[in-house]
Image (cartoon, rainbow, N blue to C red; front, side, top):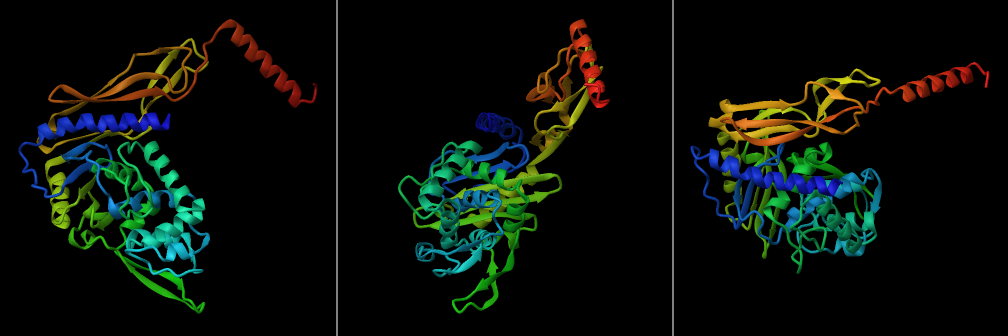
Length: 387
């Protein structure tokens, strides 16, 4: 069911791409030099800009977004790990781990995301799954479950390998999920920090880690996410920024102008689009009367976050209708679809969100009434010790 929901969400994001692109003609669309790029609304998943967003390519160290998700969700961040010879000898960007070093999983994840430690990625993989190969299986399973359907990973760090690829859309989609985790969001928004470090003599001291994401210093609204560079992938950047009630994610792949292009994409998103919010996920949007039920009313819930990103000039023309019956007839089942939230722009429907029943309500029939009375009587007698 989770995979199905993710697939549906992906399709919704692709469908909604057509609306904002048409409505944003008044804003100057940036000229992005990247081989592939995307701008996504992090809250709704809507695609606001697209350049080859489903083109497969080497993702370099943006791979570590997925590695970090698995590590954080393991619930083992405060456990101590022991660094292997293989992990410490991983080439490329490094935390400079050494064989036999004791370090917490939390510190490895911090080094993974800030310093982009390839050695940290392997150490995480080995600790959580026993080997990088076994961890990669978990990565691919997680990517598929999230709906990143055009990605395949062969290692936890993003070093170039045959069959190791992702897309701008998939990286934005996985980042959207990751940024909902407060631990991940806090780490990728950290410019600089220190971690505890035991040297080879067993002496403890602090080591400074500085984030490789220069956008955190260049753009006031920036709050993530991850850099990546290899010869095959070129310079890459997954970035995020928050302004008011809007949160945006930009991805540029193989882009030698990645800092400027990412800033232009994010600024374009904030200047050209607005977020219209109606209801949060599982928010009660109505209370409906129920006929012939053991309860007289049922709460009506929005199944997902009910919001729409629109071109700024269209914001005054957004209207929302809740399509619900005047009343329901029992039985009502928990999770039963009972209506829809419909978003309109200029009186044209552009998005729907299902409304479901929050509670199950049994039908009031004579046999059921008698059964309930007998059950209540037996419970009362049992409480009195008469049975």
